[in-house]
Image 1: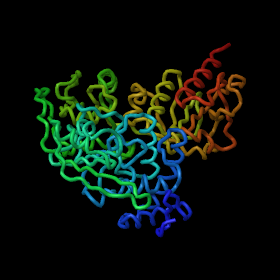
Image 2: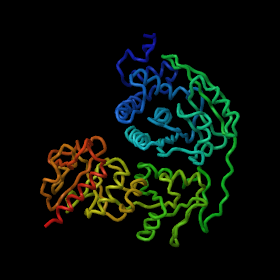
Image 3: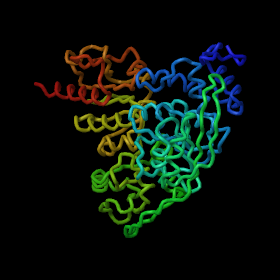
Length: 485
Protein backbone atom coordinates (compact mmCIF):
# COMPACT_ATOMS: atom_id res chain seq x y z
CA UNK A 1 0.00 0.00 0.00
CA UNK A 2 1.21 3.50 -0.80
CA UNK A 3 1.67 6.13 1.88
CA UNK A 4 -1.43 7.91 0.64
CA UNK A 5 -3.71 5.00 1.54
CA UNK A 6 -4.27 3.72 -2.00
CA UNK A 7 -2.68 0.49 -3.19
CA UNK A 8 -0.74 0.25 -6.44
CA UNK A 9 -3.58 -1.82 -7.88
CA UNK A 10 -6.00 1.02 -7.27
CA UNK A 11 -7.76 -0.69 -4.34
CA UNK A 12 -8.55 1.53 -1.38
CA UNK A 13 -7.69 0.53 2.14
CA UNK A 14 -10.61 2.62 3.30
CA UNK A 15 -14.31 1.86 3.16
CA UNK A 16 -15.77 2.89 -0.22
CA UNK A 17 -17.80 6.07 0.14
CA UNK A 18 -17.83 9.83 -0.21
CA UNK A 19 -15.02 10.30 2.32
CA UNK A 20 -12.68 8.04 0.35
CA UNK A 21 -13.49 9.91 -2.87
CA UNK A 22 -12.82 13.24 -1.16
CA UNK A 23 -9.46 12.01 0.11
CA UNK A 24 -8.51 10.77 -3.35
CA UNK A 25 -9.33 14.18 -4.86
CA UNK A 26 -7.22 15.98 -2.27
CA UNK A 27 -4.29 13.62 -2.80
CA UNK A 28 -4.50 14.28 -6.55
CA UNK A 29 -4.25 18.05 -5.99
CA UNK A 30 -7.98 18.51 -6.58
CA UNK A 31 -8.79 19.67 -3.05
CA UNK A 32 -10.71 22.64 -4.47
CA UNK A 33 -13.34 20.16 -5.65
CA UNK A 34 -13.29 17.74 -2.68
CA UNK A 35 -16.71 19.09 -1.69
CA UNK A 36 -18.14 17.27 -4.73
CA UNK A 37 -17.41 13.89 -3.16
CA UNK A 38 -20.99 13.25 -1.96
CA UNK A 39 -22.46 13.70 -5.44
CA UNK A 40 -19.64 11.69 -7.04
CA UNK A 41 -20.44 8.89 -4.60
CA UNK A 42 -24.11 9.11 -5.59
CA UNK A 43 -23.06 8.95 -9.25
CA UNK A 44 -20.89 5.93 -8.42
CA UNK A 45 -23.95 4.09 -7.15
CA UNK A 46 -25.93 4.86 -10.31
CA UNK A 47 -22.98 3.84 -12.47
CA UNK A 48 -22.69 0.46 -10.77
CA UNK A 49 -26.39 -0.20 -11.33
CA UNK A 50 -26.31 0.92 -14.97
CA UNK A 51 -23.09 -0.97 -15.67
CA UNK A 52 -24.75 -4.29 -14.89
CA UNK A 53 -27.02 -3.86 -17.92
CA UNK A 54 -25.13 -1.52 -20.24
CA UNK A 55 -21.45 -2.39 -19.71
CA UNK A 56 -20.57 1.26 -19.08
CA UNK A 57 -17.05 0.73 -17.71
CA UNK A 58 -14.22 -1.78 -17.87
CA UNK A 59 -13.11 -0.76 -14.38
CA UNK A 60 -14.75 -2.71 -11.57
CA UNK A 61 -13.03 -2.06 -8.23
CA UNK A 62 -13.84 1.05 -6.23
CA UNK A 63 -10.24 2.29 -6.17
CA UNK A 64 -9.75 1.82 -9.89
CA UNK A 65 -12.99 3.64 -10.66
CA UNK A 66 -12.13 6.56 -8.38
CA UNK A 67 -8.74 7.09 -9.99
CA UNK A 68 -9.56 6.04 -13.55
CA UNK A 69 -12.89 7.85 -13.81
CA UNK A 70 -13.51 10.55 -11.22
CA UNK A 71 -9.96 11.80 -10.63
CA UNK A 72 -8.96 11.47 -14.29
CA UNK A 73 -12.08 13.35 -15.42
CA UNK A 74 -11.29 16.27 -13.12
CA UNK A 75 -7.49 16.53 -13.33
CA UNK A 76 -7.59 18.60 -16.56
CA UNK A 77 -9.29 21.37 -14.54
CA UNK A 78 -5.79 22.06 -13.22
CA UNK A 79 -4.50 22.65 -16.75
CA UNK A 80 -7.20 24.42 -18.76
CA UNK A 81 -10.11 26.82 -18.25
CA UNK A 82 -13.56 25.68 -19.35
CA UNK A 83 -16.48 28.10 -19.32
CA UNK A 84 -19.77 28.94 -21.01
CA UNK A 85 -21.25 25.93 -22.81
CA UNK A 86 -19.07 22.82 -23.14
CA UNK A 87 -19.82 19.70 -25.16
CA UNK A 88 -18.70 16.24 -24.01
CA UNK A 89 -18.42 14.44 -27.36
CA UNK A 90 -19.14 10.72 -27.03
CA UNK A 91 -20.04 10.84 -23.36
CA UNK A 92 -20.72 7.10 -23.02
CA UNK A 93 -21.24 6.36 -19.34
CA UNK A 94 -20.80 10.04 -18.48
CA UNK A 95 -17.04 10.59 -18.63
CA UNK A 96 -15.74 13.17 -18.33
CA UNK A 97 -19.04 15.08 -18.57
CA UNK A 98 -20.86 14.05 -15.37
CA UNK A 99 -17.91 14.55 -12.93
CA UNK A 100 -17.16 17.88 -14.63
CA UNK A 101 -20.81 18.96 -14.39
CA UNK A 102 -20.75 18.11 -10.69
CA UNK A 103 -17.51 20.05 -10.14
CA UNK A 104 -18.43 23.03 -12.35
CA UNK A 105 -22.12 23.90 -11.85
CA UNK A 106 -21.42 27.31 -13.42
CA UNK A 107 -20.85 25.69 -16.83
CA UNK A 108 -23.61 24.33 -19.12
CA UNK A 109 -22.61 20.80 -20.16
CA UNK A 110 -23.95 19.24 -23.36
CA UNK A 111 -23.47 15.47 -23.31
CA UNK A 112 -23.55 14.12 -26.87
CA UNK A 113 -24.02 10.35 -27.14
CA UNK A 114 -25.39 8.34 -30.06
CA UNK A 115 -26.38 5.13 -28.25
CA UNK A 116 -29.97 5.36 -27.05
CA UNK A 117 -29.66 3.23 -23.90
CA UNK A 118 -26.68 5.29 -22.78
CA UNK A 119 -28.47 8.58 -23.37
CA UNK A 120 -31.34 7.25 -21.27
CA UNK A 121 -28.83 6.43 -18.53
CA UNK A 122 -27.29 9.91 -18.74
CA UNK A 123 -30.72 11.55 -18.53
CA UNK A 124 -31.56 9.43 -15.49
CA UNK A 125 -28.27 10.45 -13.82
CA UNK A 126 -28.88 14.15 -14.52
CA UNK A 127 -32.38 13.89 -13.07
CA UNK A 128 -31.37 11.82 -10.03
CA UNK A 129 -28.44 14.11 -9.16
CA UNK A 130 -30.44 17.25 -10.00
CA UNK A 131 -27.83 18.45 -12.46
CA UNK A 132 -29.76 21.35 -13.98
CA UNK A 133 -26.60 22.34 -15.91
CA UNK A 134 -26.65 19.13 -17.99
CA UNK A 135 -28.31 18.66 -21.39
CA UNK A 136 -28.19 15.27 -23.12
CA UNK A 137 -28.17 15.28 -26.92
CA UNK A 138 -29.05 11.79 -28.28
CA UNK A 139 -27.17 11.71 -31.57
CA UNK A 140 -23.91 10.65 -33.14
CA UNK A 141 -22.33 13.93 -34.15
CA UNK A 142 -21.10 14.02 -37.73
CA UNK A 143 -18.92 16.70 -39.40
CA UNK A 144 -21.96 18.49 -40.86
CA UNK A 145 -23.73 18.84 -37.49
CA UNK A 146 -23.60 21.93 -35.33
CA UNK A 147 -24.17 22.02 -31.58
CA UNK A 148 -23.09 25.60 -30.77
CA UNK A 149 -20.65 25.52 -27.82
CA UNK A 150 -17.69 27.42 -26.41
CA UNK A 151 -15.58 24.30 -25.95
CA UNK A 152 -15.48 20.56 -26.55
CA UNK A 153 -14.03 17.80 -24.38
CA UNK A 154 -13.58 14.14 -25.32
CA UNK A 155 -12.03 11.28 -23.39
CA UNK A 156 -10.70 8.17 -25.13
CA UNK A 157 -13.41 8.19 -27.81
CA UNK A 158 -11.75 8.36 -31.24
CA UNK A 159 -8.61 9.63 -33.01
CA UNK A 160 -7.91 13.35 -32.56
CA UNK A 161 -8.57 14.33 -36.18
CA UNK A 162 -11.92 12.53 -36.23
CA UNK A 163 -13.02 14.31 -33.04
CA UNK A 164 -11.93 17.74 -34.28
CA UNK A 165 -13.64 17.27 -37.64
CA UNK A 166 -16.88 16.34 -35.90
CA UNK A 167 -16.66 19.36 -33.60
CA UNK A 168 -15.53 21.85 -36.25
CA UNK A 169 -18.95 23.35 -36.92
CA UNK A 170 -19.85 23.42 -33.24
CA UNK A 171 -16.97 25.09 -31.39
CA UNK A 172 -17.02 28.86 -31.74
CA UNK A 173 -14.04 30.76 -33.13
CA UNK A 174 -11.52 31.13 -30.31
CA UNK A 175 -13.01 28.21 -28.37
CA UNK A 176 -11.05 25.15 -27.30
CA UNK A 177 -11.16 21.40 -27.79
CA UNK A 178 -9.62 19.39 -24.94
CA UNK A 179 -8.73 15.77 -25.68
CA UNK A 180 -7.76 13.13 -23.09
CA UNK A 181 -5.09 10.92 -24.67
CA UNK A 182 -2.54 8.29 -23.72
CA UNK A 183 1.21 8.95 -23.96
CA UNK A 184 1.61 7.52 -27.48
CA UNK A 185 -0.43 10.00 -29.50
CA UNK A 186 2.32 11.69 -31.55
CA UNK A 187 0.97 10.17 -34.77
CA UNK A 188 -2.45 11.68 -34.05
CA UNK A 189 -0.91 15.11 -33.41
CA UNK A 190 0.99 14.87 -36.71
CA UNK A 191 -2.16 13.84 -38.57
CA UNK A 192 -4.07 16.86 -37.27
CA UNK A 193 -1.21 19.24 -38.13
CA UNK A 194 -1.15 17.96 -41.72
CA UNK A 195 -4.92 18.36 -42.17
CA UNK A 196 -7.01 21.40 -43.02
CA UNK A 197 -9.18 21.12 -39.90
CA UNK A 198 -9.84 24.49 -38.25
CA UNK A 199 -7.96 23.81 -34.99
CA UNK A 200 -4.36 24.48 -33.96
CA UNK A 201 -2.54 22.75 -31.09
CA UNK A 202 -2.12 25.29 -28.33
CA UNK A 203 -0.43 23.08 -25.75
CA UNK A 204 0.22 19.48 -24.80
CA UNK A 205 0.27 18.59 -21.10
CA UNK A 206 1.75 15.35 -19.77
CA UNK A 207 0.62 14.20 -16.32
CA UNK A 208 0.36 11.00 -14.30
CA UNK A 209 -2.47 9.52 -12.28
CA UNK A 210 -1.48 9.76 -8.60
CA UNK A 211 -1.76 6.10 -7.54
CA UNK A 212 -1.20 3.87 -10.54
CA UNK A 213 1.30 6.28 -12.12
CA UNK A 214 -0.38 5.80 -15.50
CA UNK A 215 0.72 8.51 -17.91
CA UNK A 216 -1.83 10.75 -19.61
CA UNK A 217 -1.47 13.43 -22.25
CA UNK A 218 -3.87 16.32 -22.57
CA UNK A 219 -4.12 17.98 -26.00
CA UNK A 220 -5.61 21.48 -25.98
CA UNK A 221 -6.60 22.76 -29.43
CA UNK A 222 -7.80 26.27 -30.24
CA UNK A 223 -10.51 26.89 -32.86
CA UNK A 224 -8.94 29.15 -35.47
CA UNK A 225 -11.85 30.49 -37.49
CA UNK A 226 -15.57 29.99 -37.96
CA UNK A 227 -16.82 28.21 -41.05
CA UNK A 228 -18.54 30.40 -43.59
CA UNK A 229 -22.25 30.39 -42.86
CA UNK A 230 -24.52 29.02 -45.57
CA UNK A 231 -26.26 31.76 -47.50
CA UNK A 232 -30.01 31.42 -47.66
CA UNK A 233 -33.02 33.47 -48.55
CA UNK A 234 -35.20 34.15 -45.54
CA UNK A 235 -38.82 33.07 -45.43
CA UNK A 236 -41.10 36.09 -45.95
CA UNK A 237 -41.88 37.77 -42.63
CA UNK A 238 -39.63 35.46 -40.64
CA UNK A 239 -37.41 36.61 -37.80
CA UNK A 240 -33.89 35.41 -38.64
CA UNK A 241 -31.84 33.97 -35.78
CA UNK A 242 -28.18 33.20 -36.42
CA UNK A 243 -26.50 33.44 -33.01
CA UNK A 244 -26.40 30.95 -30.14
CA UNK A 245 -26.47 33.97 -27.83
CA UNK A 246 -30.01 34.82 -28.94
CA UNK A 247 -32.32 34.73 -25.90
CA UNK A 248 -35.15 33.02 -27.79
CA UNK A 249 -32.86 30.25 -29.02
CA UNK A 250 -31.53 29.67 -25.51
CA UNK A 251 -35.13 29.41 -24.28
CA UNK A 252 -36.01 26.85 -26.98
CA UNK A 253 -32.90 24.83 -26.14
CA UNK A 254 -34.07 24.63 -22.52
CA UNK A 255 -37.37 23.16 -23.74
CA UNK A 256 -35.47 20.03 -24.78
CA UNK A 257 -35.19 19.17 -21.09
CA UNK A 258 -38.02 18.05 -18.83
CA UNK A 259 -37.07 20.77 -16.37
CA UNK A 260 -37.29 23.51 -19.01
CA UNK A 261 -40.63 22.23 -20.27
CA UNK A 262 -42.12 22.03 -16.77
CA UNK A 263 -40.81 25.48 -15.82
CA UNK A 264 -42.27 27.28 -18.84
CA UNK A 265 -45.27 25.10 -19.72
CA UNK A 266 -44.03 25.17 -23.33
CA UNK A 267 -42.58 22.56 -25.65
CA UNK A 268 -41.39 21.83 -29.20
CA UNK A 269 -43.06 19.59 -31.78
CA UNK A 270 -40.83 18.64 -34.73
CA UNK A 271 -41.82 17.31 -38.15
CA UNK A 272 -43.74 18.59 -41.15
CA UNK A 273 -46.73 16.24 -40.82
CA UNK A 274 -47.22 16.71 -37.09
CA UNK A 275 -46.85 20.48 -37.33
CA UNK A 276 -49.32 20.69 -40.21
CA UNK A 277 -51.85 18.53 -38.32
CA UNK A 278 -51.56 20.62 -35.18
CA UNK A 279 -51.95 23.89 -37.09
CA UNK A 280 -55.09 22.48 -38.69
CA UNK A 281 -56.61 20.99 -35.52
CA UNK A 282 -55.60 23.34 -32.72
CA UNK A 283 -53.56 26.31 -33.90
CA UNK A 284 -54.38 28.13 -30.67
CA UNK A 285 -51.64 26.23 -28.82
CA UNK A 286 -48.95 27.22 -31.37
CA UNK A 287 -46.85 30.19 -30.28
CA UNK A 288 -44.62 30.18 -33.35
CA UNK A 289 -43.09 28.04 -36.08
CA UNK A 290 -39.36 27.48 -36.38
CA UNK A 291 -37.88 26.92 -39.83
CA UNK A 292 -34.43 25.74 -40.88
CA UNK A 293 -32.70 28.04 -43.34
CA UNK A 294 -33.17 26.47 -46.77
CA UNK A 295 -35.30 23.79 -45.13
CA UNK A 296 -38.90 22.63 -45.37
CA UNK A 297 -41.74 25.11 -45.24
CA UNK A 298 -45.20 24.69 -43.75
CA UNK A 299 -48.49 26.46 -44.41
CA UNK A 300 -48.78 28.82 -41.44
CA UNK A 301 -51.97 30.76 -40.61
CA UNK A 302 -51.69 34.53 -40.36
CA UNK A 303 -50.79 35.78 -36.91
CA UNK A 304 -48.45 32.92 -36.00
CA UNK A 305 -44.84 34.18 -35.87
CA UNK A 306 -42.20 32.57 -38.08
CA UNK A 307 -38.57 32.17 -37.05
CA UNK A 308 -35.83 31.11 -39.41
CA UNK A 309 -32.81 29.60 -37.71
CA UNK A 310 -29.28 29.07 -38.99
CA UNK A 311 -28.89 25.36 -39.81
CA UNK A 312 -26.60 24.67 -36.86
CA UNK A 313 -28.99 26.24 -34.37
CA UNK A 314 -32.02 24.54 -35.85
CA UNK A 315 -30.37 21.10 -35.84
CA UNK A 316 -29.78 21.29 -32.08
CA UNK A 317 -33.52 21.70 -31.52
CA UNK A 318 -34.43 19.07 -34.10
CA UNK A 319 -33.27 16.10 -32.02
CA UNK A 320 -35.11 13.57 -34.18
CA UNK A 321 -33.51 14.91 -37.37
CA UNK A 322 -36.85 15.61 -39.06
CA UNK A 323 -35.61 18.64 -41.00
CA UNK A 324 -38.51 20.58 -39.54
CA UNK A 325 -40.51 22.64 -39.23
CA UNK A 326 -40.77 22.81 -35.44
CA UNK A 327 -43.88 24.14 -33.73
CA UNK A 328 -43.23 26.12 -30.55
CA UNK A 329 -46.27 25.22 -28.48
CA UNK A 330 -47.96 26.09 -25.22
CA UNK A 331 -48.74 22.89 -23.34
CA UNK A 332 -52.38 22.67 -22.24
CA UNK A 333 -53.11 22.96 -18.53
CA UNK A 334 -52.88 19.65 -16.68
CA UNK A 335 -55.68 19.60 -14.06
CA UNK A 336 -55.41 17.55 -10.89
CA UNK A 337 -57.07 14.14 -11.08
CA UNK A 338 -60.08 13.73 -8.77
CA UNK A 339 -59.13 10.14 -7.92
CA UNK A 340 -62.22 8.60 -9.53
CA UNK A 341 -61.49 5.81 -11.99
CA UNK A 342 -63.47 6.06 -15.25
CA UNK A 343 -64.39 3.26 -17.64
CA UNK A 344 -60.67 3.06 -18.51
CA UNK A 345 -58.18 5.38 -16.85
CA UNK A 346 -54.57 4.87 -17.88
CA UNK A 347 -52.23 5.60 -14.95
CA UNK A 348 -48.62 6.18 -16.02
CA UNK A 349 -45.50 6.22 -13.83
CA UNK A 350 -42.96 5.85 -16.68
CA UNK A 351 -40.01 8.23 -16.57
CA UNK A 352 -39.11 7.86 -20.25
CA UNK A 353 -40.73 10.54 -22.47
CA UNK A 354 -40.90 8.23 -25.49
CA UNK A 355 -42.77 5.59 -23.50
CA UNK A 356 -45.19 8.17 -22.09
CA UNK A 357 -45.90 9.51 -25.59
CA UNK A 358 -46.41 6.04 -27.04
CA UNK A 359 -48.79 5.13 -24.19
CA UNK A 360 -50.83 8.30 -24.74
CA UNK A 361 -51.10 7.48 -28.45
CA UNK A 362 -52.26 3.92 -27.67
CA UNK A 363 -54.70 5.22 -25.03
CA UNK A 364 -56.37 7.45 -27.60
CA UNK A 365 -56.48 4.71 -30.22
CA UNK A 366 -57.93 2.10 -27.83
CA UNK A 367 -60.60 4.31 -26.27
CA UNK A 368 -59.23 5.23 -22.85
CA UNK A 369 -61.15 8.02 -21.12
CA UNK A 370 -58.13 9.80 -19.66
CA UNK A 371 -54.42 9.60 -18.96
CA UNK A 372 -53.22 10.23 -15.41
CA UNK A 373 -49.53 11.00 -14.93
CA UNK A 374 -48.40 9.91 -11.47
CA UNK A 375 -45.83 11.76 -9.42
CA UNK A 376 -42.35 11.45 -10.96
CA UNK A 377 -43.59 10.44 -14.41
CA UNK A 378 -42.21 12.15 -17.50
CA UNK A 379 -44.37 14.88 -18.99
CA UNK A 380 -46.66 14.00 -21.89
CA UNK A 381 -45.59 17.36 -23.37
CA UNK A 382 -41.85 16.74 -23.34
CA UNK A 383 -40.69 17.17 -26.99
CA UNK A 384 -39.91 13.47 -27.39
CA UNK A 385 -43.20 12.48 -25.76
CA UNK A 386 -45.15 14.81 -28.04
CA UNK A 387 -43.57 13.30 -31.12
CA UNK A 388 -44.18 9.73 -29.90
CA UNK A 389 -47.82 10.58 -29.13
CA UNK A 390 -48.40 11.78 -32.72
CA UNK A 391 -50.31 14.79 -31.27
CA UNK A 392 -52.58 12.61 -29.11
CA UNK A 393 -51.33 14.54 -26.06
CA UNK A 394 -53.28 17.56 -27.34
CA UNK A 395 -56.49 15.57 -27.83
CA UNK A 396 -56.79 13.24 -24.83
CA UNK A 397 -57.39 14.52 -21.27
CA UNK A 398 -54.02 14.52 -19.47
CA UNK A 399 -54.34 14.84 -15.70
CA UNK A 400 -51.87 15.12 -12.84
CA UNK A 401 -52.22 12.28 -10.37
CA UNK A 402 -50.79 11.40 -6.96
CA UNK A 403 -47.70 9.34 -6.27
CA UNK A 404 -47.92 5.60 -6.83
CA UNK A 405 -47.91 5.00 -3.07
CA UNK A 406 -51.15 6.98 -2.68
CA UNK A 407 -53.25 4.87 -5.06
CA UNK A 408 -55.00 3.15 -2.16
CA UNK A 409 -57.19 6.27 -1.90
CA UNK A 410 -58.48 5.87 -5.47
CA UNK A 411 -62.22 5.29 -5.99
CA UNK A 412 -62.50 2.25 -8.26
CA UNK A 413 -60.42 -0.82 -9.00
CA UNK A 414 -56.78 -0.44 -10.10
CA UNK A 415 -54.76 -3.10 -11.91
CA UNK A 416 -50.97 -2.80 -12.06
CA UNK A 417 -48.99 -4.49 -14.81
CA UNK A 418 -46.50 -6.80 -13.10
CA UNK A 419 -44.76 -9.85 -14.65
CA UNK A 420 -45.35 -11.69 -11.36
CA UNK A 421 -49.08 -10.89 -11.21
CA UNK A 422 -52.20 -12.93 -12.02
CA UNK A 423 -52.68 -13.75 -15.71
CA UNK A 424 -54.71 -10.97 -17.31
CA UNK A 425 -56.63 -13.29 -19.61
CA UNK A 426 -58.25 -15.10 -16.69
CA UNK A 427 -59.73 -12.08 -14.92
CA UNK A 428 -63.17 -10.50 -15.15
CA UNK A 429 -62.85 -6.88 -16.28
CA UNK A 430 -64.70 -4.44 -13.99
CA UNK A 431 -66.94 -1.70 -15.37
CA UNK A 432 -64.51 0.94 -14.14
CA UNK A 433 -60.79 0.25 -14.27
CA UNK A 434 -57.55 2.10 -13.62
CA UNK A 435 -54.67 0.44 -15.49
CA UNK A 436 -51.25 1.23 -14.01
CA UNK A 437 -48.05 1.12 -16.09
CA UNK A 438 -45.04 1.37 -13.77
CA UNK A 439 -41.56 2.85 -14.01
CA UNK A 440 -38.73 1.41 -16.03
CA UNK A 441 -36.75 -0.87 -13.73
CA UNK A 442 -38.68 -0.96 -10.43
CA UNK A 443 -42.03 -1.34 -12.18
CA UNK A 444 -44.94 -1.10 -9.73
CA UNK A 445 -43.06 -2.08 -6.57
CA UNK A 446 -44.21 1.10 -4.79
CA UNK A 447 -47.92 0.49 -5.45
CA UNK A 448 -49.95 -0.29 -2.29
CA UNK A 449 -51.29 -3.77 -1.55
CA UNK A 450 -54.81 -2.68 -2.52
CA UNK A 451 -53.68 -2.48 -6.16
CA UNK A 452 -54.17 -5.79 -7.97
CA UNK A 453 -51.10 -7.10 -9.82
CA UNK A 454 -51.85 -8.54 -13.27
CA UNK A 455 -49.55 -10.03 -15.88
CA UNK A 456 -49.62 -10.42 -19.65
CA UNK A 457 -49.08 -14.13 -20.39
CA UNK A 458 -45.90 -14.61 -22.43
CA UNK A 459 -44.19 -17.45 -24.20
CA UNK A 460 -40.45 -17.60 -24.73
CA UNK A 461 -37.63 -16.44 -22.49
CA UNK A 462 -38.34 -12.69 -22.23
CA UNK A 463 -38.92 -11.71 -18.60
CA UNK A 464 -40.91 -8.57 -19.35
CA UNK A 465 -42.12 -6.21 -22.05
CA UNK A 466 -41.34 -2.58 -22.76
CA UNK A 467 -43.69 -0.36 -20.73
CA UNK A 468 -45.37 1.16 -23.79
CA UNK A 469 -45.87 -2.23 -25.43
CA UNK A 470 -47.24 -3.81 -22.26
CA UNK A 471 -49.66 -0.93 -21.69
CA UNK A 472 -50.98 -1.12 -25.25
CA UNK A 473 -51.51 -4.89 -25.08
CA UNK A 474 -53.32 -4.63 -21.75
CA UNK A 475 -55.62 -1.82 -22.97
CA UNK A 476 -56.40 -3.79 -26.12
CA UNK A 477 -57.28 -6.88 -24.06
CA UNK A 478 -59.53 -4.89 -21.71
CA UNK A 479 -61.43 -3.28 -24.59
CA UNK A 480 -61.62 -6.58 -26.53
CA UNK A 481 -63.13 -8.38 -23.55
CA UNK A 482 -65.69 -5.64 -23.04
CA UNK A 483 -66.84 -5.90 -26.65
CA UNK A 484 -67.54 -9.60 -26.31
CA UNK A 485 -71.22 -10.48 -25.78
